Length: 394
Ligand SMILES: *Cc1c(COP(=O)(O)O)cnc(C)c1O
Image: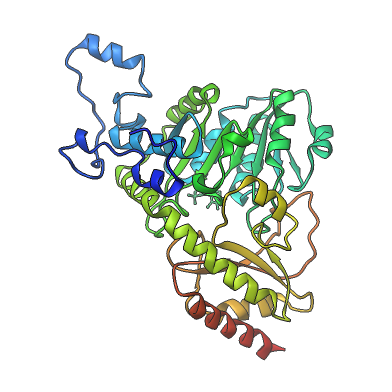
């Protein structure tokens, strides 16, 4: 079916399905495979020419992997996608694919902490140097940081934890002038709300663990590429020995079907709670590009078609870490734990120590919330318990 002209929700339902190929079954089956058998040596040699696109060896993908990967690429407007075992594997593979000893990377200071640790603790050992730039830099401000050996511009918009939006099209245009490969961590927006390739990005990475899988029961990463960048990234993934497990692929494909309706609900709940939280005297600031008072709001309106259910807020400066922890400990519906994007709500204290190099933040305590699919009123009542616990400490 040609799905390109359909509305987003319809596309999420219909992409990557071929019931006629699988005895009429609605969903592509879950293939388990290491060995792929060939009818002859000649057929095997023929398949080798196209090892990344046809069933060749289990590690490189099965028909269910290819169906999911193509859904992701089509939905985001990319060429092809590569599924790997986690979001972290996706971002480290994407970066490693484009650098060698002596090269330089520009990485946003707002990057997910393991992205930074990979640059600092791993790439540095191989002679690749990283400069961290503040996430809100304009292209003009970023330009002087570019060196002749700069090979990758890494973006994440909005930032992890602090949620700043980046001017992705302007930064990508600048990178293009210097033949620098741009990699965007697009996990927050998903392929539904940010068409990375229309903004000029070369490689988009996703932690499918978050909204795509959506049920806190599996981990998966996806790297989506342009035609020019595809083979380089696929080869790196193959050389690292990455593999995406069949159950995870199946669950991620299934997650795509309900992603638009889940995200819509989660964004709506986020808006309701941001509105309520912003009126609390204990709160200094809401951190979310989909919040109308946020500095990134205009960029978000321009570059994204919708919001998500993940946002942070800053407490007034008089509150200490003890207040912040008392708030979170008092919550009953919001769980305390890592990750986000599941059907259940989560709360986390934001700790920026050691994960921001060149961006100054006031030392207010910050809390990150991930909206689940609970009723917003119940969640608000839960947050009231948090504020009560915070005020009880005085
Ligand atoms: C969670 C996360 C990742 C890493 O994903 P995993 O699947 O947990 O490895 C990468 N980027 C962002 C923005 C994330 O939130």
